[in-house]
Length: 262
Ligand code: PEP
Image (cartoon, rainbow, N blue to C red; front, side, top):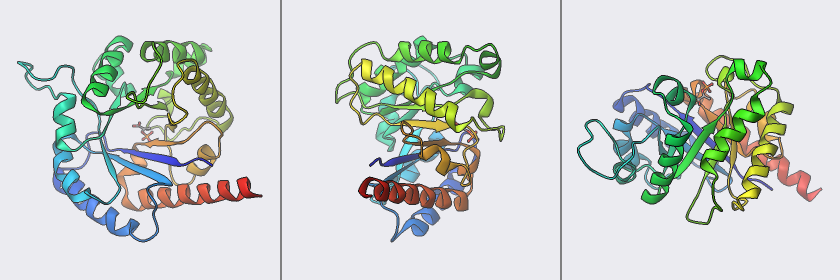
């Protein structure tokens, strides 16, 4: 029986006040029926909102992720935010290698790998995004791209001090309303699982799907054997959608339990 994980990526949306008010309302709407042990929920606000949200979400079970981080611990790096600062502010996870970072900020596989190490060092769980662009998919290169992106970060056996989450996000499905076929996602998630097995990663490494996930299509992805949750952009900006998606994930888990029992 799997537990699920939903990560809301707010990108460069919502002011600090809007984020805090969303967090307050979210906590109220989840109270009494949501079980964070069954469906984990993580919010990735803008970096400036992390500290305030950490206070309003304390003890509620919703965790916080940063959307990016810089290398280094401290030093003369104007504008940079280290993993340590993000951890101190209240983040417990960090999204790394998002396609928007790779595309607009020229982040390479090598840099993502360095950031993963730095995140581990500071006690943050990296959520590493991988996925092919539309032209790579059209050229039949999806598997090659995933292999390359995974090889960069999975170079050695992973121990318990290397918590990791992989998000498979086909770039052409991000923010476009086009979703990948369940069957394709299932196959690629299986490929990712095989990679994780090779580095003896603990079975607890969740594999998420991301790309235009919403309350209507979430259940289909959660039903796939190797998919443990979703990384959600646009739909996570709406409180109603987030609450609906937590309900869908709780429901999917209950269906799972009855299948296991039956
Ligand atoms: C994302 O930003 O990681 C994402 C998957 O966005 P969206 O859900 O809007 O496609």
